[in-house]
Length: 152
Image 1: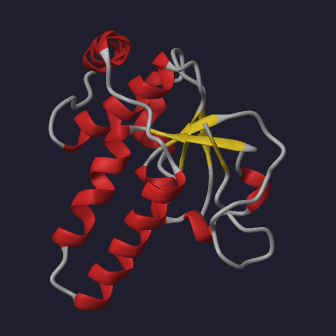
Image 2: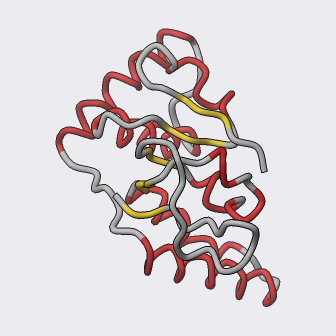
């Protein structure tokens, strides 16, 4: 787990302690980190390897050179700050459980949704809450994982 890189009262988002216990966070929180109130985030944060992969794809997903540079900077700062939680056999088992839950609710489990489920499975396997700015994406999982909404 790493210290929260959100700066108190602005500044560089590299290190600053907070008041809540550790948590996993998803891509939506990383991309809006500078806009989320510090008191809404925990003292220590963890990030899934899946989130890191999404960030790695980010610079290649835009043709705008300014946006590409911004995404590359975010990726590099995140890589320097976090040692991501791996997708291992425990996460794979948790993914199966989450997949079955989503299927039973009649919601989509493939495509972009698969990444969200892997991020949620990483949090479930690590017994961490999931902080997200897209809580509706995880609404059918609240019986299995603590989903905490944050607003940018």
